[in-house]
Length: 361
Image 1 (cartoon, rainbow, N blue to C red):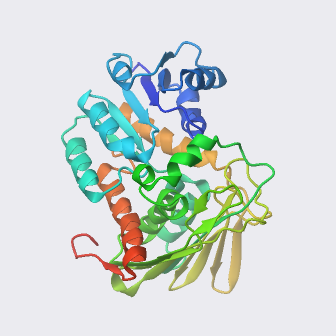
Image 2: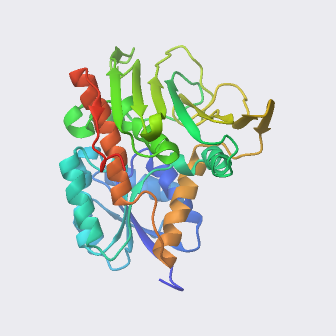
């Protein structure tokens, strides 16, 4: 790849593609050369908005994969299409970035891990939250022993309303209401991938997961899997939870989804708070640390949700160009999926899901 920008083909040009395209469009080591969507008008509109007037506009993924100028494929399709599309892209010899969650089941994930392992090109399950600047700062503090050994992680996901949120097409919400297409609810399974990835990132794989997943019908008629709470147990007696609450009259400050995300990590010596994600409530410090009787805050961190996409994509461009290990690998994506599926199973059975030593390793 040296001396030649990576040719990027984007499959699926829905709402979220605007954030995926940012770094590909401005990084000198990458160039968007093709867009593919069944809705040609949507693909053409995205190409114009991104300044990619020379990109090929296609409605057939096979045609995109056949192009010699496409080195990397970014797959942004509904979840039930992930497995087949990713396998096609890998077998076409492309580097692949696959939108989370990677698949709908562990059987599918196992198959995709095998296919990715046989490829000579890097394979990435796209996850942006662990690249979010406040999360990177919190991880830096944890690694520097700022709070000692982490003992628990508490994650709050709080959708509401917003006068400044971006417009999401009805079709993007419609398929998420169909479990056969989405794999689970929009908040605990779909968006929950970010939260399970955060728990995995800071605490490792769980030994047990126990969940209650509620159901709320919104004014628009869609169904949200809230209120919900998912509890985790990790090795060494460490614990955590994800709490999801829909507050229909809570105003969220955001340019993207109307949702606030908050994280608290408690250790043997101190506590770290991460105070924003998709959006925010007021103007809290993005990161705060309590240690030795003192509060230290960080206000000078980038907090736009798009920054997490930019940094995640930048990392992968570097991996494809120069070698290295993508984040998440196919196996890491499978670990996060196992976490999410365990929550769904526990909510259905009313019992905790226990993992064997190998699964919790």
